[in-house]
Amino acid sequence: MSERKFGFETRSLHAGHIPDAETGARAVPIYQTTSYVFRDPRDAAQLFELKQYGNIYTRISNPTTAVFEERVASLENATGAVAVASGMAAQFAVFMTLLSPGDEIVASSHLYGGTMVQLAHTLKKLSIQARFVEPGDLSAWEAAITPRTRALYGEIIGNPGGSILDLEPLSRLAKSRGIPLIVDGTFATPYLCRPLDWGATIVVHSATKFIGGHGTSLGGVVAESGNFNYSGFPSIADPSPSYHGLRFFDTFGHYAFLMKLRAETVRDTGACISPANSFQLIQGLETLSVRMEKHTSNALAVARHLSEHPKVARVRYAGLPDHPDHERAKKYLPKGPGAVFAFDLKTRPGEERSTGEKFIKALQLFSHLANVGDARSLVIHPASTTHQQLSDDELKQSGIGPEMIRLSIGLENVEDLLWDLNQALHAASV
Ligand SMILES: *Cc1c(COP(=O)(O)O)cnc(C)c1O
Image 1 (cartoon, rainbow, N blue to C red):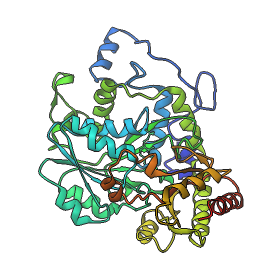
Image 2 (tube, rainbow, N blue to C red):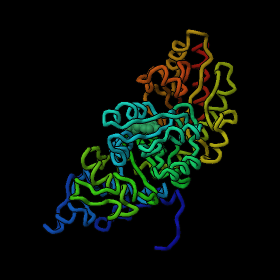
Image 3 (spheres, rainbow, N blue to C red):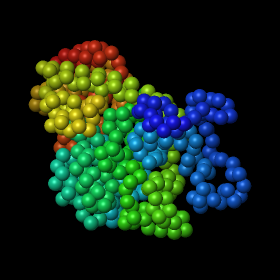
Image 4 (cartoon, protein in one colour):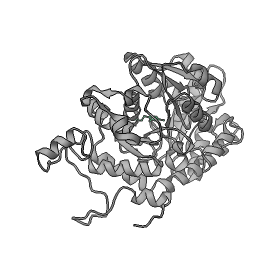
């Protein structure tokens, strides 16, 4: 093959796979198998000792999933990737691989509701403390770091207010403290932003959303830069009791983190992805660029329309010039800041909730459900659904009020979406 570095679209169709030599199958086959025959007993022992790379059991690796992993790694400009059952599983696998009891993590307060709960409550059970900071305030990140801090965490496009993470200074800060910056790239996908190119060490995705793109399959993926020096980082550098004292960083170098995440964390927590889901997510990757173009152009048109609508108080889309992070969006997401954003209804005092309910009920094309990144347009009321586990204080910290509506703009004719929103705003008679 040539030395040519292929473009994004070409790699989204070809990376990680060549047509099946035996059958000629052009599409990636679904290897629906739990286990793999060893060539001989020596081969088996080598595989189990991590002295040889190969498939043992689908909880750890699978050939269909491997294509998905290599394709994501290629699109993220990563050294490699590991796919798991869901976005939540991807984040958790990263935390379990990097953190030990007594460690701390500093995170943006503008996060997916489930992530907030995982960080604040589930990690607490493992004696890991999360400190939340306003993502745009660099000095707050600095101040929250202690000698026990082992990672920084944020979403490239914050949920649901659309804040944009300032990747460059945050990666510099992380580097200066010898800790990795982990970025959730779900709302952007590698088509709109590649956090590793801006100095982040790890990117996680809920592939359930725009990567799959059709609301059919759960999946998550972790990709890593391969250029973080883990030599002084205990969980990756120290001898591992679960592999006879194997030192992952000494042994696997740039691949140490991903090797440990796969061979220990995913092996032991069991949050593997099914080969059938990997297949679905590969189909999503193959059309990612054309879908994201349309998602973002539709989103910008809808955001502009709503921002001029008399029944809308404000629109929080970083693609609009009045958003506080608009300049940052232009820098890190020049093709547009995705297709998920929130807006506030104009309501009378005390009627925030009921007006929101009337509006959602009147919509005809938008589906009311807890998801984003479907080909169809979606709507939800965060305060009563995705973020309802948060206390009033946490809600306020995340910038979520009862008058806020979140949209995920799909691939429909944009005129039809504007029609639907207009008629529902009218019906809610704000
Ligand atoms: C959905 C989502 C998650 C969790 O992913 P699942 O696949 O639902 O487990 C994490 N982060 C963001 C930004 C999400 O939108």
